[in-house]
Length: 621
Image (tube, rainbow, N blue to C red):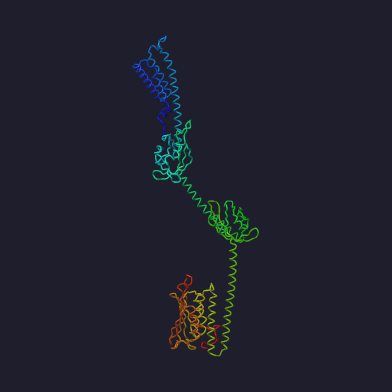
């Protein structure tokens, strides 16, 4: 801030040194008067004293000026008039009159200097106040004079805001300032608000200026400017202020962007809620008051409009079977501040029953719980209808399985009755083969009925049960089963495999040994390298050199193998037994059971026993 030394000097307080200085100035004035009298006789006696009084009064104060006037006046009168000052009657040049006239003249000078000093003090005070006001302005502020543009006063923050000293705002200086219009155009020298106010008297309020500082940083300024007019309305100066609003502009930009994001998020949320037919609820944890929107109220059988009611009023409409559970879950969420999800049955005042799902979360910091509710009545009804249909299907399937089992047993019984009445050996043999095949189908059907999904059959279990049944056909032979494939196959593959294994076993028991001879027949099952191999080996008489004769059994085996894409191999020689195997590709691990626990099925002997349902005719029939 600037202030003149003159006004500072005029406004300061009087000290002892001022009195001594006043005496010194008075003495100098008297000596000058004496010198002038010697050079220019007849000069007015007190002509030098008056300027001395003015100087002392202005710079030292009224007291020193009065002291200078008395001492200087007395000394001047004594030196100038000498003894004539005391003569009476006065001489012709009347020194007494000059001296008396000097007294009011000195008083007038003292009064004038005192007034000047008071005016200077007021001016200094006003200037100090203005300077302090400028110092306190939190931005750049300046007063420039017309027409030069010289800076008379500026604020302490000017350099910090602009990034450089603010010395003058003449056209030559302003062109180097980095002001930009909002559209990016640089300011011309005469475009700056403070200069426009100086040139045209324009009042500028809150004009935005983007300012590029010398160090390259950008400041957003809000500029105010206006003219200073004299009594005749002429512009004698202009005042300008600029405030750095960079942080505010950035905050406003972030706020606008945040509001846009929140508005978009709210619109997406509203669209999702509408698309999902969801109702909104909110509860004040302290008061336990629930606020529902129109859709949520409608789901609970209330008028379809926003409503507020106590939690207990809503809880009372929950089905009695669900009340304790829903209350416990909701209280736990409120206490722990976690999520909440529940599905329960709700009964409206009209008696209508609806199923709803309520999902939400407790927010302890906000002392509220919020969430959504959806009506799942239609879904529950569909699930109940589907469950009823599944139960009806299971009943029907079990009934059908039972009838099929009874039908197969009836067929077997009829065939056995027919077998007992047929005398022809070939016919008896054909009927025995048919009985064995039907029995194999019944055995596979029982395994399928015992499976969990009524579609897949554990092939090891099927083969073990087959060995138990077939082993009773010839009590003299021992049948062993070593099934460790650990496979569960689809019924379309498992049943043909069971029939093939049954053909292999029955052929071995009927044809590999002489009537009454002892022997051993072994069935093995292995799954290796993506293939299932089921083999039946006997130590019987073997096939004759010409090989096995072609018959119905051979045709059945070929048809079944072709049906499931399997390959049948036979190895036999006279007197050394026979081994027949079927190889079925199973596609790697596709057919392997899902259980992680590997069970080991040990080979065990199945001794033939006379079962109550075993055929009563010998093998050779």
